[in-house]
Length: 555
Image 1 (cartoon, helix red, strand yellow):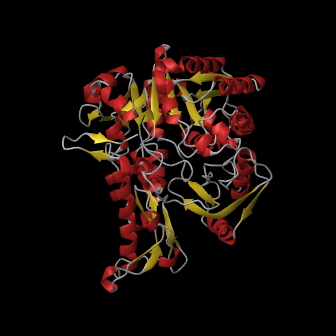
Image 2 (cartoon, rainbow, N blue to C red):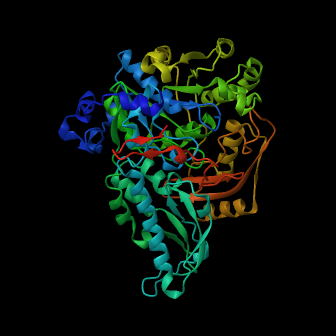
Image 3 (cartoon, rainbow, N blue to C red):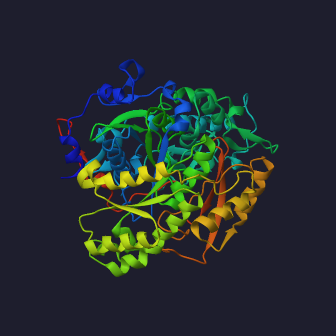
């Protein structure tokens, strides 16, 4: 059966029953119908957060369809619960860009899903809409101030870096001109759209401690300069209060359930190739407050989501993961060994072995943070015994724990070995999280540390625009911010064609965006775009709804 068919066969429990598993009664949650709820921040207990066990799920460099980190995270949480460990999985919300694009939904797969999958994959509780509205309110206020004669800050429109956003892959909106139509329609200027998942508002929501911190960060958003060369922030436009008001419900994490009736908290949805790629600090702390084990995931490979999770989110929120699961697929290893995408279901042990250096590099990356990794082989029906044996042999030779995880087919039962490995690592106390770099280091040093130590680059080059950005960062006194690299997920390098474990390459920094509200800098490498496009045949072609309201084609 398809993921959607499996999901429809599950008899959902009322959300109050799920809340009870977390020790919460009906009055402690805000229900959105029978199967969804918002959780108030009062459920966070920082003392319990320090005692809880945080497990990060990441992956090797993925194929275009992804390697199943969400599916693995859900399955692992089910397995841990089956072994008697009170566990909550904490995930990001799906963006409609991938849902209607090439990757599809982000609620897991098979018998390792969060439900109700249709609601979660579509509008859910409206968080993305609120983020979009808050972002575009600021855009409207900026253009209004530029045109204003009585309430003008004297903003130089040529310096405004703030774009608009929408939660859709729409490449035609990357570069636009606004303000056409004469004096009553605004001041003409070049701008564009980013996808909502790449919005700084999304990043702010996911890194904020609470509503007050959210409002403070919104005010610190850097807009551009006045004609007098003075920097302009959102707080200068007196708009942060209204933006925070729009986000008053979106800042609260969402409670849903897994197929096996265990709690799942879902909140925020930044991409890991163009943003920080992890759920919110509030949601993670909430999971840790209410559970002994909290399983969370970070987008794409360990070079992207995991690095940002550890260097940005963990340092910002004072979190310390006890273990890292590296989701690995036979098909991705063969792809990185040179096999054609169309042949990944054919047995090819030779190509697989040639792709193992990619896995080796991701293991090394995790170990650089002084955290113990475990390999989870996300099994597909096309995987042969010989191919699985080759990965097991590699793990044994490298003294790394490995588990065959059949979570898609078996749910928690397919993750029992993996769950036991995770428990063993946690109880051994071997992990002692250490950040890769000091935030107070200079910007170029931080960028080059990530590029050389995590990606394996030989050197970093900066365009003339990036060099100008570095001077701006220094002038604004923002050199002590961490780094959120925008880089292709398809390669450890900034060239998507360099598969496997490339060496001797140069990372090129095209420009560096300033996310002063979120509290990080965004060096953009290669040809990365913050507004993706749709494939020739998007997933939307297969999605429909009948007269009874039954949706089909979601996956």
